Image 1: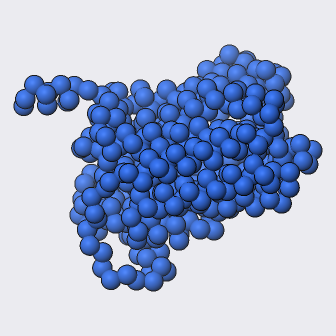
Image 2 (image 1 turned 30 degrees about the horizontal axis):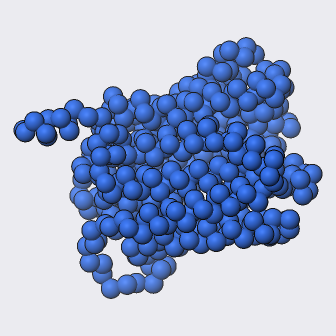
Length: 417
């Protein structure tokens, strides 16, 4: 091994990933786009509340993150696997930029706000699986995938922590229009960066089949793969806990911990800090994502945190527990994405990621609805107990149904190289 190769090997996976020019371009494009997302998210909730005065209608905007995934997810996955992924991302960015720009003019009309939010989320349904599917093609070696996914995830969280106060100040002093303009500019800059991203041509595809046939092929792949089938079951069970606890954290803070908005903000900060730090720590000390403990252990940790939150009324305990929760959430998420990228062949990767996104959003939607009903009948503590049990069950299910051997490179039966 040469001195240069030895120096490269000593670097963390994150540094090696960022050293790859093509991945660095994707990272810059996605980071800039996420900066715009922060400004848009803050402006959107403030705007809808100003227009309606209704907390319910503000909450309804979250539906636009979920419904398009369920409506277009299968088609999006097929499109991502059928067309060049860079082109899919550029078209999505240009479309979302145009929609964000239209909000600068139309933001006084609630119907336009809802329609544009829906259309933007629909285009994101195509962008997201394309972006995560292309990462293995942009790093120099498979061992760098964990670092690549870690830096992409952490940059999103750090952007939210740093820029949310600035976005709030901009909306307070200048209204929502400038914030939507910032978001539009971020999409256009992202599209410009991605348009110069060159990826080696994929292996020739068979004669193009109908989209429904592509969807069916993806579903059959998941059904017949022990790894993918097991992960889908675990994902579905875990998702049933996520929506309710996130939506009802403010209720837990006020009704169980008896803290006001200032300390509730600190609880959110604890989660975000853990989410941002977790992937960075993970990639620094872990080099192989194919370990059940890295994938299912975080689910057990999150389940225990939910039970701790119910059993204690001490703010310091809740703060520390939620920091651990955030850390476990994103370390598990980065491991999950890395494992799928390593285990699924390129030509089906878009459909697989789109499917898992649909599973997550469907579970999240169900969780929000069920959590509200359960909170009314058993109180917020009952929701967190149920969520904790679901997460513990998901972790145990993963250990029981996804054997370690299924995480190792195998043959084409699992859609793997």
